[in-house]
Length: 146
Image (cartoon, rainbow, N blue to C red):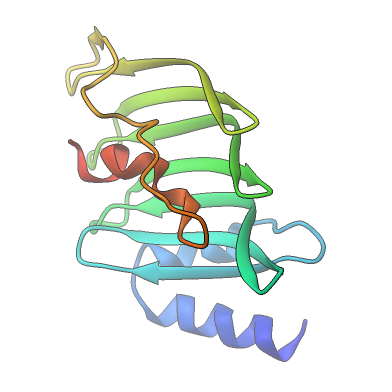
């Protein structure tokens, strides 16, 4: 392991319950694990530098303040790909979406009782990022429950 990886790993372990799961991220070759914590969410992702900018590439996870996994998905070259899943803070499923090359192809969603619902307003493919900023903001709704 490189010294940088060990430092990031130690920081993630010390920053709270959610980020402690970051050690389970299997980052692709040439990427490193990173993460951050706010009062609303703890996040961990894999990234690499391209052209002087961080590019999300590999798994992404976000945890509720109680440590429960809230969002899980994958990025490829800064674009959401494959199946992304979201859970309520109590662990019940909130939604599941399938992305191809950053575009939402299909999704399904549930209310807190498990009843299927239509796509919630503003969720979750509302692209909030701008070039050079955090692409992972696709799933703000999953993480905040809005």
